[in-house]
Amino acid sequence: MLIVMKPDATPAQLETVCAHVRELGLIPHRIRGETWTINVFGVGRSAPTERLAALPGVSACEKNGEPPTLVRRQQRPQGTTLMVRDEPIGGGRFTLIAGPCAVESREQVMRTAECVSREGVRFFRGGAYKPRTSPYAFQGLGDEGLRLLDEVKSRFDLRIVTEVKDVETLPAVVQVADVLQLGARNMHNYSLVEAVGKVGKPVLLKRGISATLNEWLLAAEYLLAGGNAQVVLCERGIRTFETMTRNTLDLAGAVLTKQLTHLPVIVDPSHGAGLASVVPPLVLASLAAGLDGAMVEVHPAPDQALSDGPQAVDFPAFADLAAKLRNMRRSTELP
Ligand code: PEP
Ligand code: MN
Image 1 (cartoon, helix red, strand yellow):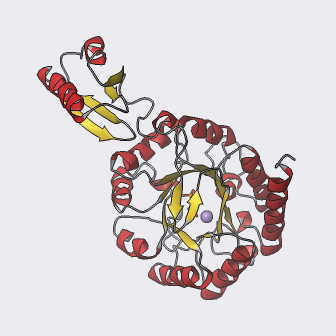
Image 2: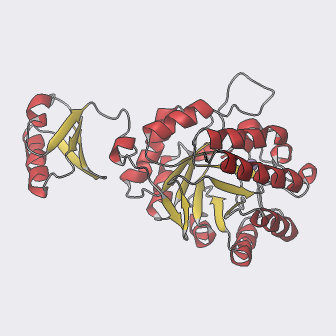
Image 3: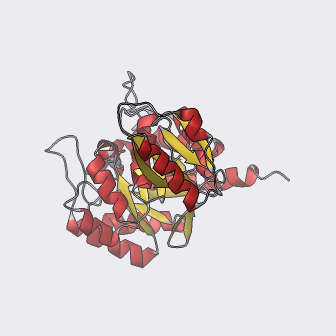
């Protein structure tokens, strides 16, 4: 059971409610959000919901676990805005994160960074440690990739979004990343999720390939319960029966998620569709749908990419997308 305290509840009222819970032989676990919530653990006697709900300072008693607590929009109706070195994610802005799937070479990342920053992009993506489906596929440049990302960061004043593959390489990634990306394959890896949350840097949490919205929100709940509310959710497509697209970008799920949570929600149509030609229209659709941004894979020569070439847009296509986004923003501003 969850006991949600009123925003103006006093510490003494919180303590009184916890004491009542203990008297029942149950364990109260306090969670600090915008308001205090007490998660009640234990078996045996069921807690007298009505009596607890009537205690001073209590707003409501609810059934355990569903929907998640700290990520709920009601916790912060105005929404969460992340600040990443003076650049916001959320708060009404549409944030474009762009760059290659993987860091492959100095020339590749510098050229791509030059292209996207010329278009006004402030967030650069690129994997140094790549979780690949096949053990024979390119696994990323590792530490050398991180060094190149660090160079991109200082040379173009771009904020770096890069994936954390495991706990072992987390300390190295933290040195360079401005936003720690938790990939679809690791959304359910709760020990990694917790470790990444503890670092205290903004986290981009991708939806698992077959995760429900509730499972995705609960993974985010791990981060918030661990004290890190700097989280952006990224819908990257789910596995369906369709085979023509790599995954199915769940735009409806992303919109619903934004209604359910105060966290910013962005989409990744590159992995969501798997086809470069489909990516730009989906970015425009996500802007029209009121989402907080999109992540796009860009490569100087997609047909030579070491990973995810078919879904990478080339430089002219990226410039065209950026122009369309600028136009759309202008044309949606009513006179
Ligand atoms: C990526 O962003 O390159 C990536 C591996 O994404 P996902 O975790 O969504 O598959
Ligand atoms: Mn990729």
